[in-house]
Amino acid sequence: MLRYALGRIALMVPTLLGVALLTFIMIRVLPGDVVELKLRGDGGRATQEQIDLERTRLGLDKPLPQQFFVWLKGAATLDFGESMWTGRPVSQEIGIRIGLTLQVAVMAAVVAVMIAIPLGTLSALFRDGPVDWIIRVITMSGLAVPSFWLGMLTILGLLTLFRWSPPVTYVPFFQDPVHNISQLIWPALAVGFRYAAVVARMVRSSIIEVMQEDYIRTARAKGLSEFTVVARHAIKNAMLPAVTVIGLEFAFLMGGLVVTEQVFNLNGIGRLFVDAVLRKDFMLIQAIVLLMAFIFVTTNLVVDLLYGVLDPRVGRR
Image 1 (cartoon, rainbow, N blue to C red):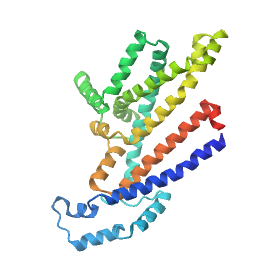
Image 2: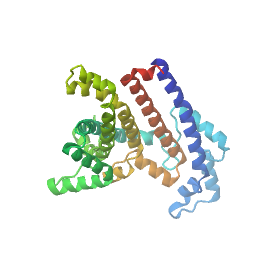
Image 3: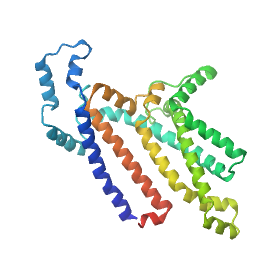
Image 4: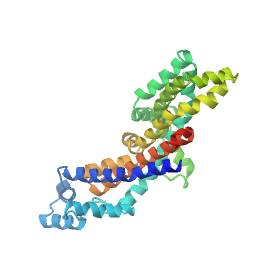
């Protein structure tokens, strides 16, 4: 198992280096200049000399290979430089927003797992019956309804029925748990509904397939109750593909909540990334993309390790 884990960790390094290099090249071949946008945007009348001085200060006058290695050296120590737009450290810009996005993603994942596994299991056990059809309608609705639209309906429903709307000012959980939860539970539910629909359909398909295996028939032939067969033999093996979906959806949420954040007025990583792209803030874009890549590869690592826990044969390959 240790050798298996070390092999997966070793694969993370070239993946992150490739993402860093590809991002660095792609954002620099795009047309436009962040310095001109900053100094001459909104009617600014900066001279060419001022623009050249600012480019020198930001290090944009150096050859591209030198710029890349300077940035990579800083990234290795979590020093991603300064934002080209605000002038504040990139790590600070990300740090004040990452907690919000991470909490929403974790809460959505918890909601999804708590809903999806029971629904998916019931749908599989009562296949093609009324329970199965009801659950399939619910899961199809989760896939069809956009999270941001469900979020808007949620806000309108709270205003109409209870004359109350979620707080608009973010407060960290440990500073005021009640205020924090009352604000973030609604986007978590809106996003978690679709999340749960995806996972529930995967759980249903996996359990249906597992229930047809020989060892399930053997367990039944030994006289085990149906509950024991499902709980001890079917669900554990059916969780392998479901764990993959749970991990990928969680990683996607860390950078894919842009519209939902707009609906609930949340200043998270997704919103920051859109602002960075609009302003062509190279340093901020590079850091956020590398962060998203790190989250994806780390999530995949956790999923691979869970594979080894759920199926010991995986860790011996």
